[in-house]
Image 1 (cartoon, rainbow over the protein chains, first blue to last red):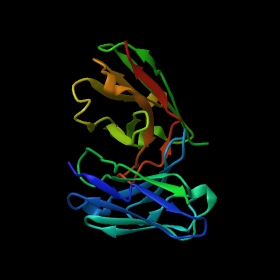
Image 2: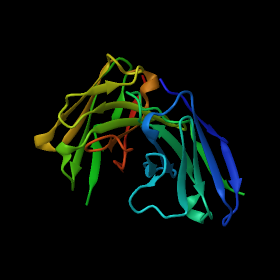
Image 3: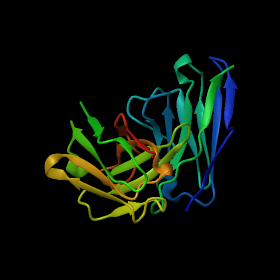
Image 4: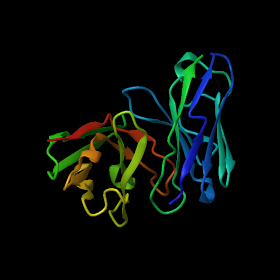
Length: 109
Length: 120
C-alpha cells in the first residue's frame, strides 16, 4: 500500500500570497497517477488536478500541479478568499487501495 | 446536469447492516468506474471500494473487506454498498464518486454524501 504524507498539516497565508502544498509517497506513483482535491466544510471534495499536473474541468489556472515519482506539489499562485479549505492528494496509480493523504488545511492568516 | 445522489444512511447498532444507494444522472453511467469514499467525523478521506464499469473488477479497503459489498445496476444507473457487521469505526459520511471511463483519472463527480452512524 502506498502511503501519502502531506505537508504542512496547516498553512497560514493571506489572500494574494502563493501557496505551496506537498505530497510525498512511500513508493513511486506509477504513471504520475496522482490527484488533488479541495474540500470545504460540509461539502463533498472537488477534483482540482489529475495525472499530477492536469487541471480538471472548470478549475482556475491559478491552481497548478507538478511532480513525479514520490514527490508532488500543488501550487496556488495568488490566493483568493474562496481558496481557504482543506486539500487532499490521492494516488490511483497502482492497484487499489487508492490512498489519500491526511490533508493540508489552508487557513487565512 | 451530471449528478450523483446518495441515500440509505442512518443510525444502526453495532453488528447491524445497512445498504447505501447512489443514483446517477446526466452521464452514461455504464461507461464509468465508480467508488465509495468515506469521511469519519473531523477526519480525512478514506477510499472504501471501487467497481469497474462492467463489474469485472472490484476492490475493497482492508478495513471493510469481508463485511462490505459493492455492486451496480447499469440498467438502473445505480451504485450500491451493502454494509454488514457494522462497527463504531464505520461511522462516517459516505460519498459515491465517479472515476474514469477508460482509465482512472481521479474522482471528478461526487455526491453530497449520506451519513452512517453506528452506535448502540
